[in-house]
Length: 379
Ligand SMILES: *Cc1c(COP(=O)(O)O)cnc(C)c1O
Image (cartoon, rainbow, N blue to C red; front, side, top):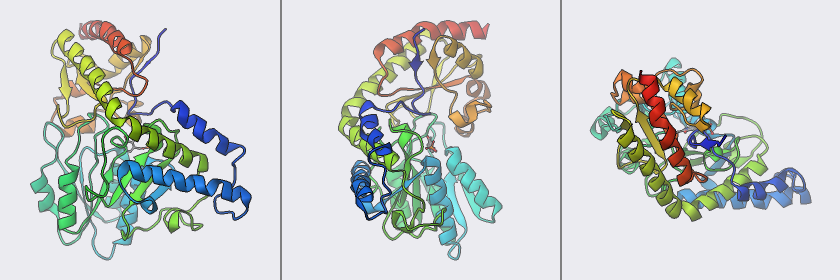
């Protein structure tokens, strides 16, 4: 059976050149970058090279990059770290109802600790109202946390506008850019972002490596206490191989971004157009223009997502009902609910997310089997 992987927003296969770049760091180049002897020196330079490559991809300075164990840690570090550092100044955080669980649950945790959270709603396209956002800011507001691109629908949030509001009102802006980095241009400096989370395994690096970009001067308490690694921002001996891999993945993503986003968007459009033409009442969720090139969220009212995914899996096709974190339980998507999507369309929502190894032949295979599956399940 042919295996077709269309769940790149959950995780990606490691790029062969990334694998090539990092595998040596588990054997010959095994040193601790803090050691001053040869073994340490052999790896210290590689960590700093990788930092430069991450910085180049998101337009920040290398010293602003703090390596973490994953995107989730970066989100936790940004939100809890700012909350702890600015506790004297205020206790109010503004976010949206469509964030990833790493942000949602960090904010819920702080809510239990006595912080006040404003949960902004979104419109049918998944966009928050910017006047409402600015109106929510008080002199107790310490952080705005809004994602760059939504993991379920691919909708791009108005990051530049939010960055302007945050700068004007002197509030820190954290942006979970895990789904955007490597897929669309992200401009940390130009978009006035104060803190930015990214993750390796969403951009063809291995699992277990991520980064939080922290603008110079931003006050942030560390989550982990220990050694002075990462300029005292994140203690713990560096995941050298992971860091090297992330650097390589960023370099490759930057080189390929223009061509790849065009190629992948064309495949995504082919998939969507084919499905809309063949499946009655199918509809696309999220903003139709302001979105990632690789993501298609489609609703098939009258069919259930878990049965759809099971049948697709039987045909060798891996897709998702939304965030991988909730697909074990298949709870109704809070993202689509916040957008005001009808319950039947939420229950029948499937996310296809394409990537580097996706081919036209694979898309056509999906188009051959999917309409029949939906028709059978609706009966
Ligand atoms: C995957 C993801 C995360 C979490 O990243 P991990 O490296 O898997 O912890 C955070 N935010 C978004 C938007 C994601 O898609």
